[in-house]
Image 1 (cartoon, rainbow, N blue to C red):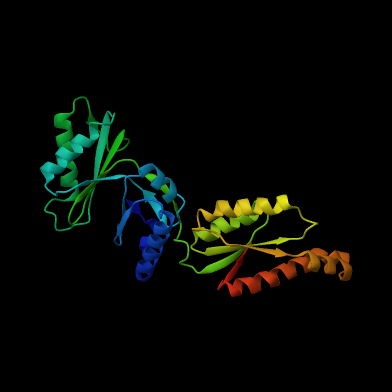
Image 2: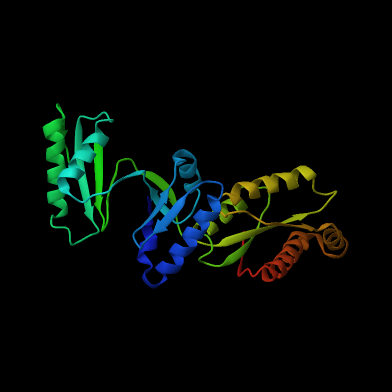
Length: 276
């Protein structure tokens, strides 16, 4: 089960954000057998490859939290209590608390009443345990939904942010340093889909420098569902600048040319911004 976090505050845009997130997840999980469904509060991925799928999901922006959930095909409180009892018997704990959320407001019991009844079942059937609402060894989360009940325990932190693509497209001016890939990561986290541009000037720059940039782009691509890299040969422009521009302005004019070329390529790629 995926929790959205700040996406849920987007009101009129929530539909677009969730469709984009679902599409990004489908692309990232294309090599796994998964079934994906969602509503405005949760997204669900049914799979047998839990560990691999969770590892992929942790690199997808727009996901606040991931939890492995157990589906109980009933809303009868006695049966829910018995199923929770079976699940927690596999765990080691001395103290616990039950936290209930009712998305189905027609359910006859309040969240507090549900928690109390499930807690009572556990206390009755497991010896040497007690309730601790402040710092429990085990937190049992129960969600009463319209057609089912979900139970989960551990929470796995997601990458947060917005789904890549909801804020349009940009071009990252990628070098071999740390600043530009961090800038790219932060732009993607705010929902910008990226392509990259790298300026090479052989023989003034080495093949190793280009390979380092391509390795950085590959690393970033895991957050971007792939990464296109434009490699521009800058040698002739750089040599003309050295011949014709006063020394004090060399770096300024080289950067200006890089910006001009980047703007042209970004426009051709339907990009709206440069990132560096």
